[in-house]
Length: 413
Ligand code: GLV
Ligand code: MN
Ligand code: MN
Image 1: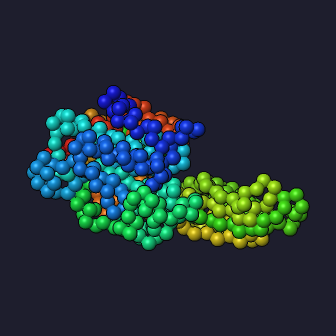
Image 2 (image 1 turned 60 degrees about the vertical axis):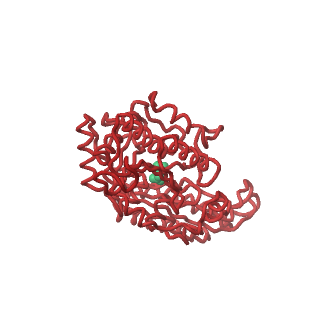
Image 3 (image 1 turned 180 degrees about the vertical axis):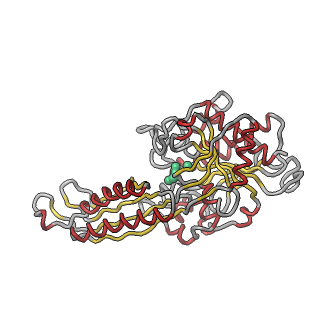
């Protein structure tokens, strides 16, 4: 971060960070997340922005046109930027927060240069983008747009069996109110999310900032392997119903099939019952994250991996069931908005290549209902979802300058 961004960035850095790993554990409605929300509120208030919490507990900070909301010269719908503040387990500092910090600093830049909005400019922090606590990615934006229903969401539970409804209540929020908000969305003309790149394409191209073209279709599937617990020292191999074996076969098959199809498959979360070193497990619960360049390939990938799980389960006397937890269709970002963003950046001497990504974002969810675009900031190693995630200060500055240019283009004239 450069001097003018540093205090803002530093004020957020310690929040929700694990002393053991240095990674972030900002899970929705836990103290780390609530502290981030308080940080958002105080930063917005410091800037004189109007803060609102929508029915889905997403946070909004509004920079209103000079004469107040609804009174702006040439005013039409709002231009919104922002991202999310929750994290994956032991996530890096940039995934999500960079978009929010950059939004506040971009507003500082514009206001400092005397550029005032002629239509509302919003900064949003979406809830549970990572799905790290309740399993469904982009939950806040999916509730807002209606792709996840309130009943489905309220029933989601975390690893301790706490439901979303109970977690919200405990945090002082109202789970009865959650659901789509077409009125809020209809007041927005465009959403621009700035995000650290979660790959190293920009580094390869020598560019500090890029613009998103599309997001690969992706989703999560839960596969349950139900076996039979028994003694590790006395049960003959032939007599076992060990769920770990079909699970292991499935993990290896996922890698092979993904390689063959040019796709991606990951088992990053697994729960073993009862979890004793000297017992055959009674059950293994595993989460498949699958992503592919197109929907047909994604379907093929999941179908082949599920078939191996079933087949291998049968040969080991293990019952296998699977269910889809979430599915995000392919996203092609609005071409007109993208061209406008690229042109606005080029006018300021910023050459921003256009690239697609396999990472999911709230911008992808909103893209189904309104023009959205994304700016990516170079990530030298491409590492993300890890405490090692990094972006150079100069590139973060370039991201802010780019975002300010886009906001100026869309909202300040
Ligand atoms: C979000 O970071 C995702 O792509 O899982
Ligand atoms: Mn992420
Ligand atoms: Mn993210």
